[in-house]
Length: 237
Image (cartoon, rainbow, N blue to C red; front, side, top):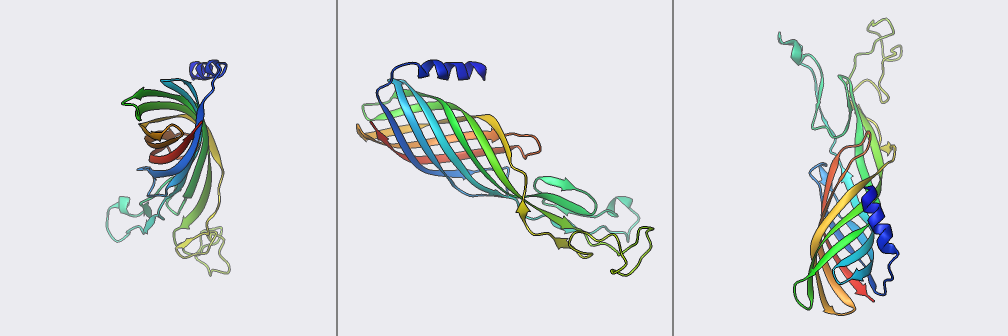
């Protein structure tokens, strides 16, 4: 990573006289989440020479969602003790116990990137390229809690009325779900890769199509692979 940063800063010392800016839609998908929305992307670049660009990007990967888990009550009617415990199936990322699941519902990830784009001319109006960037990203999260039903008990474990009980969950004694609330933000720096095609019908205008991918990896955060087919319009100067 240090060598990568050194290469970028070295190239920044070169005189560059041409560049581009553009933006478009990021058709994002991810197998790490149950539902993934599309995002947007904005690029700004400088032409070092005919086969190399410096590129900076803002990317919004869109919102990622987990479905609510399904609660499965323990079965104490048979002789198998493994069936006695409650269970939560179809869970996303969170902490699960016999009585509750506390986890993430929604993640919104955005980032700033800087990197190198290596180009090769196919003909006088079409280029193929590969890109490698460092992506500094931040994810805002929304979390919730799902709680199993409990029998009202006091501190000594005696069955009592709900009014006298001390073992209520945050939302009662029945199966219940808390309202969504803002969770902790997460951030990290990861590599972000892409390759694609640039079509230039005019010297000042280009249409760009890129497949990009990265893996978001942070402490206490779901390791999520994000893939996108980005279609953008660029103005060259």
